[in-house]
Length: 437
Ligand code: GAP
Image 1 (spheres, rainbow, N blue to C red):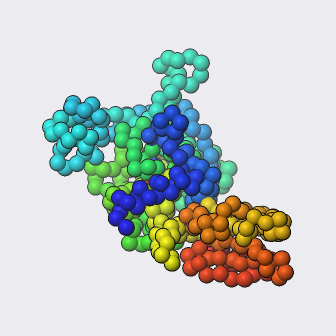
Image 2: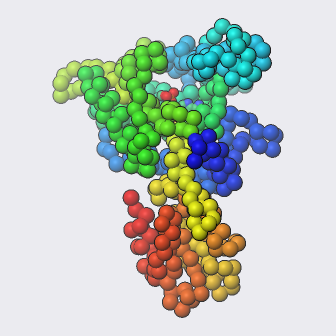
Image 3: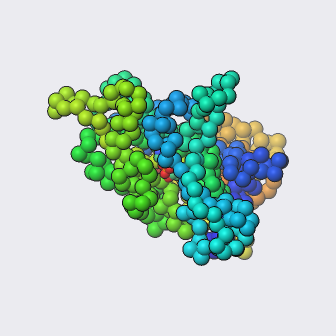
């Protein structure tokens, strides 16, 4: 399939099947934000759960945090964001559209109207959303919607370190909303002005920074591959020195082969002691760590893997989207890993029938506590299989007229379309075996 087509098809499928809707659509849409529908919210939750499981649950050196979005404005002065969290902006004098100067085509032509030589000089544009906190709107009440969750982790470094009794190397993980007034949002949920980010700050002795940086680059690459992104659609790209964020001495992007080319999926940065040092200076609180064993005090260095949940969901969707021909008809399916699939099991009575209905409900009630299920009895069975294929449901359980006699159901595999007959009293065990990682 031609790559531009792939993007269009995934966007259409997301709308059609209730994954992602344009924000405020009845008012003409809002372009830079998106809403997650009943199926999309399940997929995104599974993406976040998979990340949390790998980064927190399966490790004993990482703990979690959920810090506030609104923080003391001094945080953003200390972090450097007030001064340096900017993108270069140009205007086209001809059509008045605005662009990021570093995203312009090499031809120099305006991507909107095609005019040449029409751009203004680049000027710096701060991406943070400003707001006023409290009932009085003056300079003293200015606050910001956080552009990253990381700062909530740095300002809580001592709280978390002392209460969890962790010693470097250890990490603090957080998932939450972030806001950036992007100059050119676009490519669906790839770049939006409101998004969710999954970040982990890993605090290490200064001399160990480079080693842990390498370690996290490889760990994070492995995570995507383990969840089904083909290895040839992933690559690690170290930043050139002029690309580095204001806090970083080394960053690598984990890139994905999007339909429009290679692009950032996740960033792994060596933030050194920049943030803890700055917050020590600005707050007057000593954020150093005393290593009793070595009898020395130091400001830990930080390695940070940071990944957008929305962007990550898009990559999983693009990698999973598949079309094939089955008996002369097109079949569309999402080959999502069962750990990510929005619905794990669909329960489908063969037809809407008063004898099948109670058994279908019985099977649904049996499965519901263990799996995310969808009980669907509307339309032909073929159509219902297609609908489940399109949202990536790994198994469909069909209740048919034989079930009334043999107390068994048919379990259909999404990818192979193979079918097994399974007794209802062995169904939970059968599905757990098939769907476990
Ligand atoms: N604390 C580090 C940090 O914020 P970043 O590379 O600017 O680093 C981390 O952002 C990740 O968040 C990116 O790799 C990307 O996955 C996601 N991301 C960044 N800006 C985004 C946007 N405007 N829309 C959606 N996701 C975004």
